[in-house]
Length: 198
Length: 405
Image (cartoon, rainbow over all chains, first blue to last red; front, top):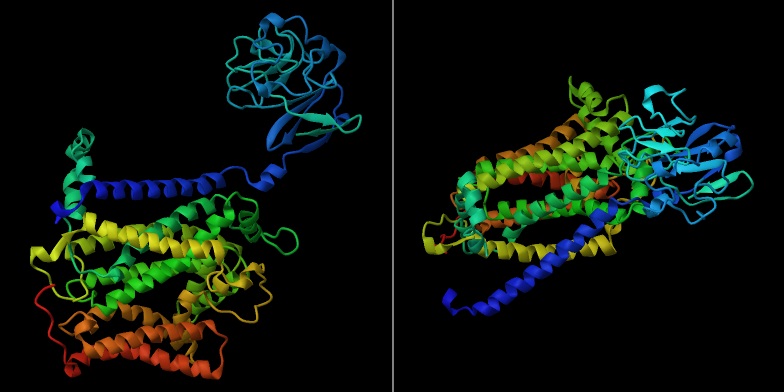
């Protein structure tokens, strides 16, 4: 029986049917993988409002935005002075390395503060190494922090997981395992003190 | 294509370590199947396909489903809301849930046809008794899995269906009350019930996979029956499973998917048969819906339950109607397998199929005196069919079976 069959015709049918089946199976994968992406209500919860006037001078609070921790710091005059003078220690002083460390509102004037209003720093609180929340060690030098920070510590954050260091504008310091500055996000002031993040 | 693959070096490497070539040959390319199987023999592979689809869609639904009866706002619950969230907010959630809900009904459609095939052509008879018995175990686990799953959306039908069925177990003497509390985890169906049903709903399909493996293994020891119901000895009466029946099964799959997809995309609730309308009302433990019935695939047994005045006898009759399936291979004494050569059995078994459909119709409808009587007569025939089988060979004059196929 096999010798009567037209083999090339038969092979064509095999390949054609197999290819159609493959396309169908591939298309079936789309809804299943798609279902694992964030759902509509998760995406809808992507904005957070916050009143920065509730943060005292020199205080840091951690709020949530899209389920991620976000630092809001009310920087004192002294802290704002600490953003200068250590540019040679920074991996990416202008926040240009990747898109996530910059923001649309970032300009040549405010990029050392990484904030729309210099006193209020708002950054994603996840260390860019492996996602821990760094500890706030704002004062310069080792006086308050001991051996956990370098001798020429400019003040900022120290990540307890793998020792990454960030300055007071959350820019990563050379020698840290973290590759990038803490991420910024789009935000704007609705009123003088009310911020909408996202 | 399979032969080409089996000649590659990679396959050779695997074969040396697993004996894969011998398995593939004995189970596929040289596994002998009667050459005369008709399309009724497609439903086994379809059942396997639906089982895989149910497990796959179930795994993805479990990523979003939350088994909690805790209240949210306005008498809704966490479980009910999570199902609605799957329908509205989760990407393709509606598709995956409809695949799962429709799949449950299609599983029973396919399996009931598979069982009917086995009864009509005498596939349960020696030497396939154990194959049949394993199949009945699969049916019972399927019904359990479907029942557990039906509670999960925590709608009115979920809640009251579970209340009714767990009450059945309460009717049993001595152990009934304890059995009922073990099922419910409380004095009424509630949050603990929902949690354990979810756990069991995830467990039962895994049991199914293992037992289906046993079913297929048992089949491959005794080999397929055929429409003539005769033993096959000659080589020219057999063809290898691959490629002949893989192609035929694949064709069956494409026809099945046509129906399955039509229902999913155009009629997922199937007029209230596949997903009951009342189940879109959140569970309320203080109010029973005006008309309550199980999903269609459980209604025949529900009618048997309702046909008796005594609660205990009703429960025992319902259990007995399923248990008697185990005995079928031993009740049927005829030397001839296929209904093609058994004129009286042929009429009786076709009437049995119609009888089960009537039982199903009665169980789905609101109870009236007429329907109750019809249900009782149908129940009597259901048991009568099995009880007449041992003495049937005394009356039945079978036709001569062919020598070969």
